[in-house]
Length: 150
Image 1: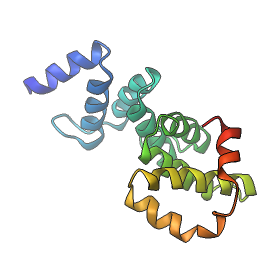
Image 2: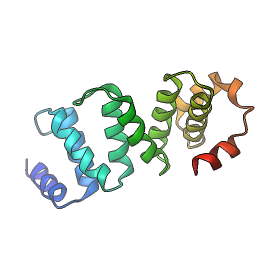
Image 3: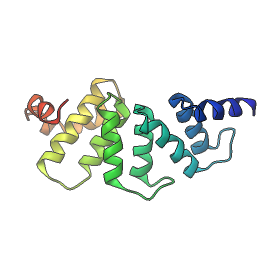
């Protein structure tokens, strides 16, 4: 229990790594009672500091409605912030969100771009999805990256 107390102290002091670790502990019930609301609060504190892992995990909570009402627009917002920092898991989840959203050509292309970026970092799940979406690869992704400021 002293480890949890130390983690809480570090998290309260603004340590984003500790905030993420504490959020995960609450999310899974590791060393503390499971509490998705507290998990969301700690992920949000890290996310608001610009932490890519806090942003990704908060986005995933909104994506699946874990401890928060399901909200695709908030999920997209937080996942994109993390994805732009190079977080492969966020890139993949953002790509999947866009892929399953309204089927507009730009959303499909953005989806393929994010999934491709995650695959390039070695995320196996992204490699598999990218292969299934190979019909989208003929698009000028360099132009799309430039348009998106990547």
